[in-house]
Image: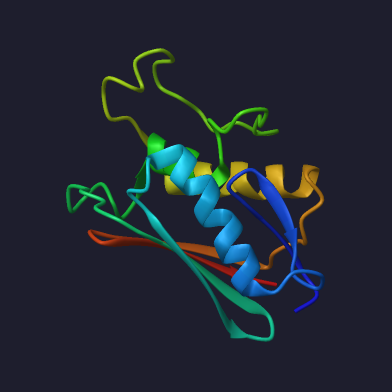
Length: 145
């Protein structure tokens, strides 16, 4: 696959780096962010589609996970919080400063818009579609190019 993807603060060139190496590097970043509480997998579904799977304990109330993502989970996917990384297009935070004490949600549409804009600024490949599927044991991000 000749695409560049943005995940955990880095743009990975899939033409130059095998998926197994990308998975290993993303896992190292996630270990730094989460203390090893999240496992990462990347799967190529087709020639133009990838799945980024973050496995962990994601306890969302049933109605929230359909429309919103926890701010901390959004930070995990983008790499916000890793040393030296700033997200170019930051999604909205309801009350800055309290996000590490209380659980804040970001509308999924707002998060995806921020992700797409940041990926473009960071020179990742353009996506035709991005879907986010939040379940109790994983968050799956599907990227279609």
